[in-house]
Image (cartoon, rainbow, N blue to C red; front, top):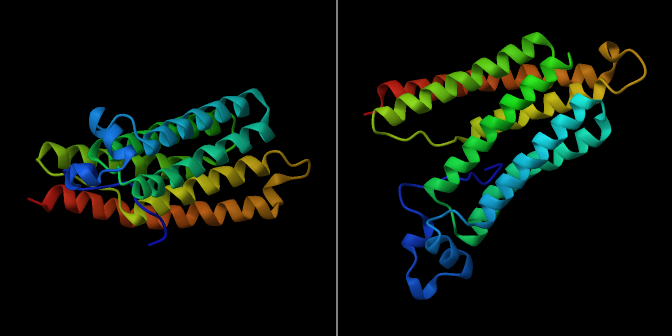
Length: 212
């Protein structure tokens, strides 16, 4: 497993741990119905950093923006590990993580497209794939089942953000960014994200439509 997914079954981890054996984080999570957990704090902090960085990018402060966005997206990787280490994974935490991903990507695509940083093909690919996954998740929930994030889905998101970051870095160069190695690398990342993302779309739609 490349990353520790922030997902669980229908019951929070602390509900499966005897009260006498619960750690401090589990006790706090239980008292707050899963709202206050270290992983949720990291997820929200990551969202704040990402949004702030994107606003900096829109204003033209690109180097500061890139640093913030990278930090924000690293939080998205860290929250799953922290949830596992503190034994505080829960359906709410999973929902917070997924919502943060969607908000960050939506705002990222908006800003990158608005500043003509992200190629239209990559933007359309990323947007359509995220819309399909969101629709499949909603359909699955309506049918009484839950779609959990997959490793492939998380990898796709990581590749999409790596491509976005690459295009952002390429836009700061003084020479022709279209011919730069950074731009070429970003194209490769975007293409890879599109390919894996298409597989994820099929997985999500199949589960949403055919699972009981």
